[in-house]
Amino acid sequence: MARRDDRYVQAIDGKKIPILTLDQKWHRLFTQTGVSAEIKRKEEKVNELLKKQGGLQTRQKDIKRLKNKLMQEVLSSMEGEEKPKGRSREENGKLIEECNEKLEEGGAALLEVEKKLEKENRELMVLSMEVCYDLMQENGEQIEQIDEWINQMRIELKKNVVRKQQKELYNQELYTYMHDIFGPDVMELFDLKYQPKLKAVEKEENSGGEKK
Image (tube, rainbow, N blue to C red; front, side, top):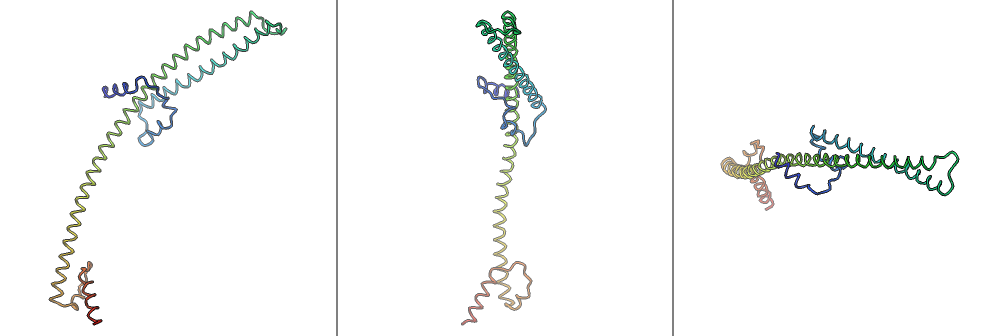
């Protein structure tokens, strides 16, 4: 199990893995089998980190928007457009510094979350590959069993076709012997569920004789 996991890790090493929980094709992998408890836990962890990432990204955008507004106010004040009730240039400068600090902190936090998200997503990928491999192995074994059953049925079918032909031939021979001994009138008394082909031939011969 561990060696197989290592092989999967090596297979995806250096490759950009899309976030699996956002991919409908990934969800369809488990429509017939359901999701294992381990994969479910990993899926929840990925979604939790995604939510955290989204929150941090929104916060970063809000801070950048505020910083741009403050910088615009500073530029306006430098051009002599400072409003009487507006913040002073020093106050705006201090707020801009605070925005820079928050952006730096938020950037570091966002980077940390993204690293964790990538790690959890890769682990989810490995777990998914493991489950899919096991399912394919199990299905492969069942396919072999079904294929073996089909081949056996083909052999039995061929044997039964031969048996059927032999019994049909034997019935025709019996019918011929009985017909020769008892005659056609007596043969009509037999309630045969299976009428030998010879009887049809006999009728054709009789009808042909009557025409003559």
